[in-house]
Image 1: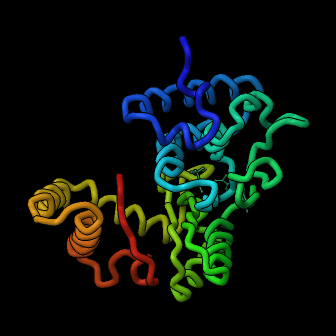
Image 2: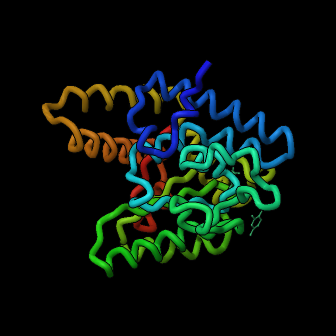
Image 3: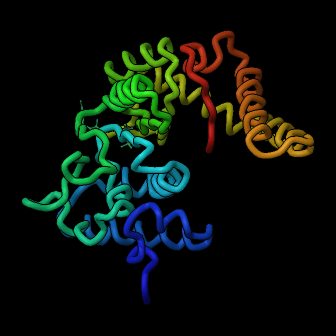
Length: 258
Ligand SMILES: Cc1ncc(C[n+]2csc(CCOP(=O)(O)OP(=O)(O)O)c2C)c(N)n1
């Protein structure tokens, strides 16, 4: 049977799919990754975990004009499959084949070649500053895991990003794992916030707030912005914490999706 994946030469085709087609595509991508990685090894779990996230990013943003910066790049197999490299995917991590990480020489969609952890926010911030100097308007998005976020360079970049106030989107892929379980104060903070989200009282409040917002006579972006703000306030209220979510305190707006 013909696969949807075989018709995807770039994000343009992805953006024409319906939700059921995208669900089917997500399954095909997982099968492709399992099949190819099981032959010669590679990063399996980090890639199986970002299938929907990667599809959503390429669907929503106008890549490659909008710049997608992956931290490390070990989780970029899905990105490679969706950006014109599916026919060469079986060569990944082999001499002369596709890189197991990102390479600017390999594709215009590979904005920043890393493989070292914790570099994405810095790189994206630099790209956002360059964009502003050039008077351009594209989006810059850094995607970073909760493990990489604990690296010194990421913390330095957050410090800088919170004060420069560039239009920069940071997607935190908080899957509670690094190479092993995450450790440290930041990881503890995130787990506290996560715990709040899963309590029945928070869920009930959230549903109530969502219901009220949906009944408001505003539509589209304004409703979404209002919903985002309401959720942030709600979270901080429920957290009972003077300092709230640490990123907000650093000047970075924080939206949670799970
Ligand atoms: C400076 C540096 N230290 C260690 C590594 C090894 N390394 C590769 S992937 C990874 C885990 C990343 O975890 P996380 O950022 O949470 O991403 P996930 O795999 O969960 O998507 C690490 C530590 C690295 N690439 N660079």
